[in-house]
Image 1: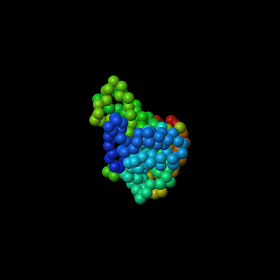
Image 2 (image 1 turned 30 degrees about the horizontal axis):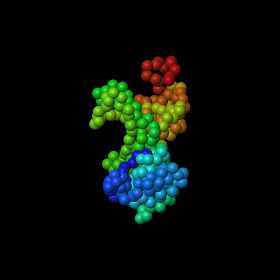
Image 3 (image 1 turned 135 degrees about the vertical axis):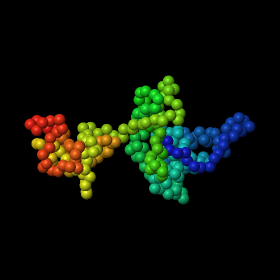
Length: 256
């Protein structure tokens, strides 16, 4: 789960006279032993706290190492992400805080669909492209109130050009046997919503509970059954019990 990079002190790597690397003042063997322990142990507390034994590595930098080097998903400890999650930057980092932060970010990533597929089209190119979400930024943008995700696409044939405008489709959830109706059929009222139905040649009213809203349709959780005929036009002029017929049918024909 790739979040924004952690804010922290900047360090540089320098070459010693013998050609070895000075890892922020840490001995190479010590760095190898510490990181090897952190990346191999199954103890979560030891995993993060052992990295802080390295000179110049605090909890934020340790989270960066785990984020990029460990096979499990670890978020980067970032003050902007903490602000977005409603957490204050603690005076002193402790494992209990780190564990709660990791669990929160992982839960958010699962709900946001990290690892799920996306489908997108690009203006000027035919066909639909596919990608996979690999990261989210747990920071809600103040101007759009949106959550930013990142995805990768193979870009076969190098057809996609950076900066091109794309329309992305992201499936958050698939609901089997979902029941939906045109959104124009929904009549809002105090405490809920209702729809008008065509039943035996007249109008019937029924209360409904709505769910997910799409651009032109609304999911119905309760109040309707498969096969019900929903009235979608003239709903401002009709009332329960009023005789009606389906357009295109005679009065002697059954209605749908």
